[in-house]
Image 1 (cartoon, rainbow, N blue to C red):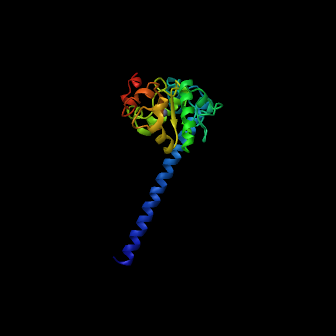
Image 2: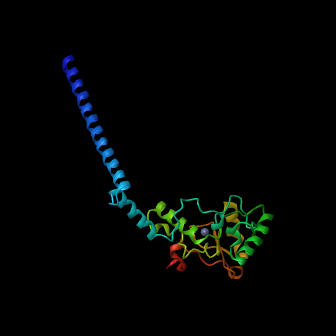
Image 3: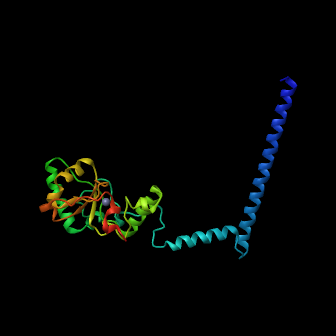
Length: 226
Ligand SMILES: [Zn+2]
């Protein structure tokens, strides 16, 4: 390629780029003008602009799911069952602990007292939950796992969750759940689902007969069928 040919090619490329930039600016200007018009229209007249229609559709969607909280994740606090770090089964002032079934709580406290002799302390990851909190967890699970069916393998709905009724506790840390898998049955504390080694419920008959065999995951639990 000769020098002059190369220079021509370069010039043409620059020109094409300039034309593209100019085209882009025209498009941006057009969008800005349209948006400006819509903003004017929505503020100065009662006619529904496309923006207004979108907004009202969004509101309609929200009101259809009115039973679900509209706050962002994290807005639900201790009163709904959120449990601060370091909470133990003895923390009566934490609603997530205090609202557990009294028999389950008594069994947990007895087990925790005995586990302390083995140098193991129970920490509560989650206990009782309000229906609103459970619904939020279920919605988060749907967005994480991609479908209601898959989410249901990990998180129950507010209607079916044993956490909402105060009958389930999630215990933190491997040493605690290992201790419970070995000794929990003596206290009626049983792991219910194979895929949730942290989730314990009270099965009083377990102290005599051992814990019932586990479900692979919550979807096999008849209680989870609505
Ligand atoms: Zn659980």
